[in-house]
Length: 297
Image (tube, rainbow, N blue to C red):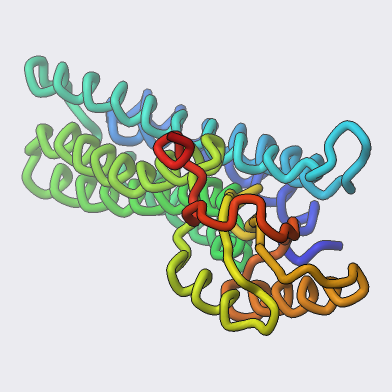
């Protein structure tokens, strides 16, 4: 199985844990009157959805290229990451609104029940986070799902602190305060995923040193000029690159070694996985690196 695809047994265990946590926290939130516990339950419910969505996206993304999808299905994981991240932000905004209402209308809270349920939730979330941690650095999709779990673990820590404070001091406004702090933290950590996934879907250029790339290609024997460069990303790891190069009027058999040298250069030095080069002699020789509308005037 592909290294980025988390074992289905792990997905099943994490999903099962989140469903159990959700049920326990809903019951505990109702019995204790804690908004923080109920918000944690909503987070866990969204986690289950996130995990299932992420797993399905990985299965789709692992499918090979075909005539209908010549670049494959890897964008499915980017879409799943975007949906998960947006869902987290929407839930966080909803929780902030609910917490604001609690500030205006304080509710009685049973601290010991709140504390006990939060400890159970924290332990289960830590186990889930441990199961997902391995793949969180290699995939935006997995990272979005992992952040769901991690945000719930942090939320549980906040609820535990709130439970202790409420039990000892009977200060109930600490409950909505913790809810607001956790919700803001989740938004701050999730926004970069939204930004990056949208950037990939809009085919924004990856962060490459284009002047250095031009310099390196021009240093290859036989290359006279480089122009009409395009670069974009299929997912957070796979960069697609195309360019036109001007060569002397040589045989096609002499062009192929130049192609190979350019491909090896771009792959080894700039981690570009897919390269398309078009050779020309005079056409476009005076054009700039990027073929902008201003270049055509």
